[in-house]
Image (cartoon, rainbow over all chains, first blue to last red; front, side):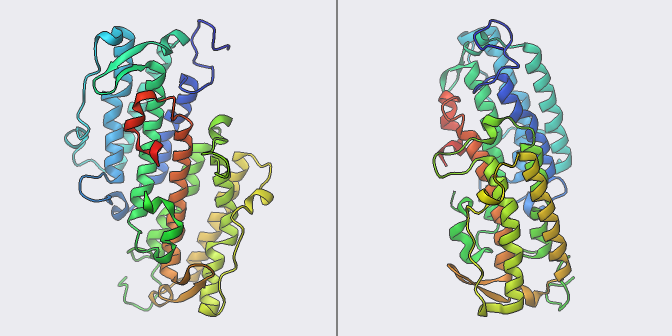
Length: 187
Length: 187
């Protein structure tokens, strides 16, 4: 489909289009599941220090975020444009809502919420014109639907990179002289 | 098993032990498979600029590395100690050996080589005394078996973080104002 057409762009490619963004979004739950389910406690509860998240907390954040962040904000843009700024949310909100949950339960929750989000995204049948519509982020100001979709995918990727970094740093001293060769330890 | 015992430490925990390192090593092929198989070309061939690797090249490197780096070097330490420095290898060696291969074939290759490595690692039945043995890295100098095992796991993690970063940077401009909130774009 030509991106200039007025119809839904679901099948068309290009940065920030539903088709491309979806490729990332649909894979994240499975990759985290294959990586973290059944992993032992020292890996799952490792952090980069006080105030930082463990791999388990990252999954809880992603599960929580799926309900309060991306798709709800997309709906606000489509329904209200810039007239209604996005509802701010509490980044640490997952702590109360997912307290005491094990990694398996959190992964299941994230996967289920993500499936719902993607079904809802598909149902919107976004057009090129929709991608150019603008909303108001309470801190960042004017943003387009295309930017929101792109940021949703990159948000997944930043947290995948975070999990790898947090786990790696558990071994920052254990690797000895190899520290110099392993870039993730210096990030 | 008590780590002080003379027997194999395969089932014992702690940083750089076979049991812990194995948890990471055995999961990496599956997580990369769930993430990258079937992904479209723009994601698979994205790089961070000239001289940097795409996600596809990272998988080719991991597949290649599995044959020339970690387990072969572990064997050198166990057989020759510091008397025989590790054989240097060509970081870009994968280009010749895996030229023209698709992502599915590369993922299959990495998974198969990794399974072989882990079976061989198990068969070694490393003891606490083995973990303290030392070898000679051609650039880094004296290293222990425990450090080598730890670095093998962190090497996986640094490349997982790299794939996330490379993919994210494709969208560095597409995310618009969200750039400020997405740390992976600044690494």
